[in-house]
Length: 201
Ligand SMILES: Nc1nc2c(ncn2[C@@H]2O[C@H](COP(=O)(O)OP(=O)(O)O)[C@@H](O)[C@H]2O)c(=O)[nH]1
Ligand SMILES: [Mg+2]
Image (cartoon, rainbow, N blue to C red; front, side, top):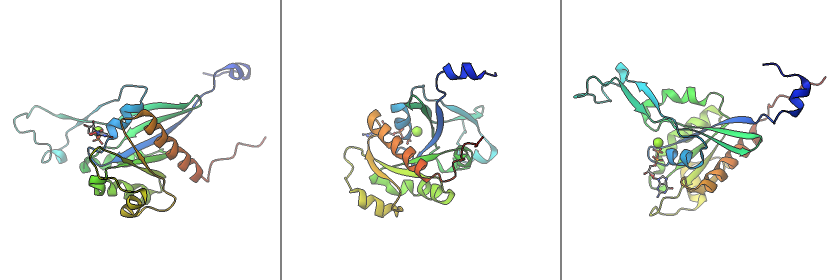
């Protein structure tokens, strides 16, 4: 599909699309977060049960079941007319870690959701992004009834680098989630020091 120069000038702006991962422990609010902002219905994928998964996925009594639903959150949000984010929720179960490297490909950055009642559940995600040099922000999903900690206390408990943004939020609230996403995008873009210069003609 080739467009001439003149038609390109009048065409609407093609938005930049960025890929953001949403990680954190099981039940921390990843699906809720993606659902709160997504303009498209969250997707679910079917994974075929592998031999390796057999001892874990107890299929006794349902031997004919060869697939299991891995809830893979996928959503899209238009932050600005020219900026669209694709959100990919990482699987919370440890045994789906092998999917993370696939998911992380081409990701600009990540949100690590944390629950202060089970802060340890997000250590693995923090470690993962630190090790791979993927920019991330930590968002504490403030569940009712959870003891409130200061941002500094959470930062200390997670041993976060100073430059890692840490914010309090609510995965159910669209504006709160947008704020989290904008923070991640800004943080990640500020760290991109190898944006190719446009070719000089
Ligand atoms: N009170 C409260 N409940 C939440 C919040 N976020 C998620 N939940 C609930 O916590 C449960 C787990 O959330 P979910 O998004 O499925 O977690 P996931 O496993 O990380 O995808 C669901 O029942 C949500 O309705 C929140 O900010 N506050
Ligand atoms: Mg989920």
